[in-house]
Length: 117
Length: 396
Image (tube, rainbow over all chains, first blue to last red; front, side, top):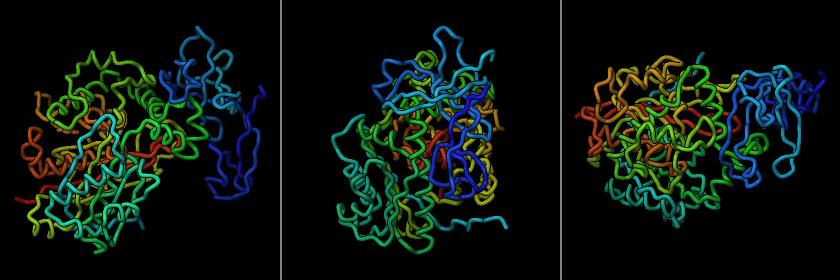
């Protein structure tokens, strides 16, 4: 289980952070670089959206979105990638994040339930 | 040593105005602000030239600024402010203006808020509300505030066992109040069945958990109590105010908004407690945020808001429950509508009317002390600005 995602980390205080910014939100160091972190996290809460301001999402509605906490207390919003017919997501479940193109062909996080979770 | 705010002394809020809300308008935000200023001067019996301070809250003023408005409206001012604080902006504008008056920077401050509900302006606002929101929230369904607040609502329900019906009770109480407010956008009787069967928007949020965006304006004047008496204006006194920003930094979906962190200082400055509040105005962008305020401001214990709503009459008239606390007596944003940043003013203008005995059919007899609370600015996954003020009616 070596899945990772690339996040910003401060080279001075070693804290990971998200969303991206140009300096460390903890120690204000500008000395930031990208680093691979464990892509496994916990689903904190989720919603099933029935409305969206972007036409891109309209034929995907209703769609699942949630917020995931990774090690290091990083909080990441993500699409929830559940196969049709699966039971609804559960807050507290273990998920794995990965990047795929979504809105405007930009990479976006998708959270997939962990095997056996 | 811990910070300690200096007391607010001798500060009056007066001349509340509401430019009636409409679902859509061809008028600009500037027009709504101008109409509010005109009504303010008229209601206060002040010539426009006597206004020397102005605070303007709006998200749809661009390309103009508050400075542009001095020229548009033909004003020369010694103090201006343009708090961009969303739903906390009414309370905080009043506090800023109070300090300006208390310090002599201005004598008569017009506090104004308006927006004009153009659908494209709302989408542009949401899409580029902040860097974090643009980069890390909007791409996930482009649901705007509904998305973030649905996550907060589910977290609250799962942690504290609150149900759809609990949020429904709140919405029904506000609709009942709105039926006595001719300005309210939504006045039709609302039943629990109507509420529960309203269509899902961002589960668990339903249509009737979401405010209706509309065009309109709210405003009031801030001056010294001495000036208000000289002008023979009915006024309320601002006796305490607190705010914090980014105070809840827990790495979890938050169950509180920050009020609990300044509640003691707020009540201490006002010399009262939650049980002394006769009318309460919370910021009701979503029912769960009202629950956070009931708890954070000490009206019930953390996690107990659902029970509080079951056991308390929040309506103008008591129906005989254990406790009666008139709340959002104008119907709040959930029923009166949300005219953008004017939504943060709604509790203030209504509180001024109530405490000066000018709330008409909505009047709470003997209302003497009000608490008005604000909340705003979702930068990423939570609102960052919490504020609250306590107002008292003048001795009669």
